Image 1 (tube, rainbow over the protein chains, first blue to last red):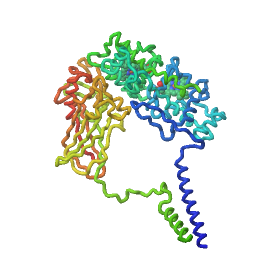
Image 2: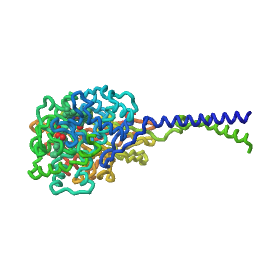
Image 3: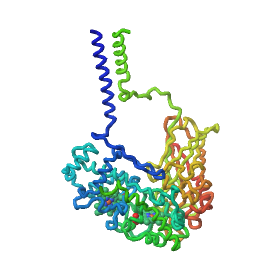
Length: 338
Length: 255
């Protein structure tokens, strides 16, 4: 009798022990959802900063693929546009006709759009794009059995929300990494520059051209705002960051754009006023206009309001800028229309 | 060993396991209750730019240096590293940590030393910049801030130690830009401040103030209209600013 009692109690205790533990490990598995998702790690060179990925939106092969489908699908808009209408892969995910900003290495940004009025993570800018800019009608996605099952797979949801759409897009943006240009190969000593490209690089990286103070080598942006003197009077869109902050010291300041793939993303500047890189370099060489908020870096000693570059120096600088073109990025199969 | 014994043992073992530890994950026993009192203090330092004795007004041409230049400050970015604290007997606490400081951004305007031995100190030393071991290309972790501080390889490599940028009024009252940038090992700024600091408790708070006017004042009277307003490739200008910066900092203990 006593033996049986002990036996039973032991078994019960053992069961409780096991049950408790299994329950706990099941909890640990969260946020992994019903179906098994495949984690994805982005390949990033060591001269890029670490990529911050929010804990509630880990990268998965399935999530990235869903983001990609959404990027190319006009279902998100009410006017037939998809993101890709104005962000076309061959133009480094920008568009000449829309003069849109390209989608390159945005995972390292913390302020978005020319005046920086959206701050935070890619999830935050996607919230703006989906809910404010596109005003996505979420019922269209919920009416699609295809998307319902895709979102179920990735986010384990029965009803799709704007947030789910934004999270999938943010995952896709995190794999839009460009780090395989001729410049990168030069930096890693696996390719050489021509003398002209080299001279352009020297102009870029020394005080001669002094581009590097804002287009910091690596990502070729400093993620900050500057008035580079394309205007001296600031009205409308040309007031830049001031339109968002109302701070007079922000008059004419714009986000420094990355120069990666710059050859593919004309026209140039926030309003697309320059058609070619030659025009841009001419501007930096001799067209800078003075104003109270002009960036201190743009006004230097004897070279006040001009760099004094020769015709050859200017050509070479353009030749260097073109070494930042990365067609393995624009043609990356993972980023193309599915 | 009898069967009865086996089950009794099993019962006891299971019972003990279950009651004592259950599943490790569930037991959140506070493990720091009765620890012996720590012998170190966490000291935080806020970095406060000043115009003389006043708080600096950013982006406004409201400062005047000893040469009479009216100037503004838009940007101050710097590294503070190797903070050393000296006891009266000459022994020192030496940290070799590097802190990137941007006083315009709240989250980057202070730093902490978490392992300062409790006690009294008579002197603080630190570098504005980086020692020679760290001041090489990729000597620091790749972060956006460190990328922005990189000093081009072709100009010597490593990092900017400090960037101070703004505008000043020239002789004709036209505003021009200046960019005081220091880099290269010979321009490393060693700051030594004699001051009594007392850290008896587990946490303390100090302020490091930086008087921006001092960058242009002594021992070299630095007139932005006469000297380089852009220092990066001017070794004389950099060495003057370096020397001026040595006494541009002060420390006060707040608690």
